Image (cartoon, rainbow, N blue to C red; front, top):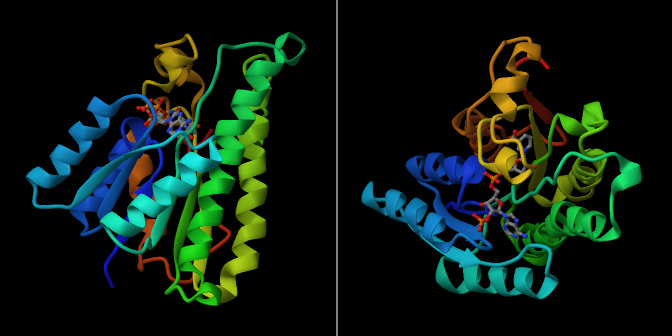
Amino acid sequence: MNKVALITGGSRGIGAATALLAASQGWTVAINYVRHAHAAEEVARAVRSTGGKAITIKADVSVEADVVTMFETLDHEVGRITALVNNAGVVDQAARVDQMPGDRLRRMFSINVLGSFYCAREAVRRMSTRHGGAGGSIVNVSSAASRLGSPNEYVDYAAAKGAIDVMTIGLAKEVAGEGIRVNAVRPGFIETEIHASGGRPNRVSELAPGIPMQRGGTAGEVAESIVWLMSDASPFTTMSFLEISGGR
Ligand code: NAP
């Protein structure tokens, strides 16, 4: 079967590493981005330079119409999706809940929760044997924050990831008999640009002493688990959560 993966937020960080690794294992990859077209094109170029197949698709996952159009583009340009990686996500500046404005909360939940639901819905409509599909795999990128709660930093982000965890459980059960596996990874502190976007570019090295393994992780280390969950190498694994957090 032609292996086609859509990786939301595939232009940078964990998503980019996942796109590159998946492509090296024979997946055709669709690299979604929202702002950094150049970064997305760089990932696609790297895939093509080693003989792989990649397209880039601009879409804001928090905008339902964008997501619908993204899946239609995927259908036309590369064919039926077999794996979705719900990776696009954002953090914000460290703040207490009693300091969080409504705009921040709406953005946090729109991108991290609604975006993942819109994408999962479109994927199930194409993958499910109930809808004439041939099955597939959905991997949600949650966070260790959903276990830890992220007090004084971003409880909103942690709660959004908690919603993704529950979606993983419920959707996994809902579509297990329709050829679709749904799993999640929970990365801990991983070296990417997300920390700079939250105002703390050195966050991982600063917090490394508190991690049992004494270091942050790499995007490539997370990608290994995601690609395994996407692949036929994990055929009986569904509703699972892989902790990729160095023991934290
Ligand atoms: P990153 O380096 O900041 O990259 C974020 C990616 O998401 C970019 O490709 C960005 O696209 C895309 N994106 C952001 N908002 C989007 C939107 N509205 N629509 C579509 N794409 C959007 O982040 P990362 O560290 O790789 O994080 C990836 C995932 O891992 C997130 O879900 C994050 O919560 C989770 N995670 C990260 C860590 C960590 O320590 N890094 C830990 C736990 C969980 P553009 O390039 O176009 O901006």
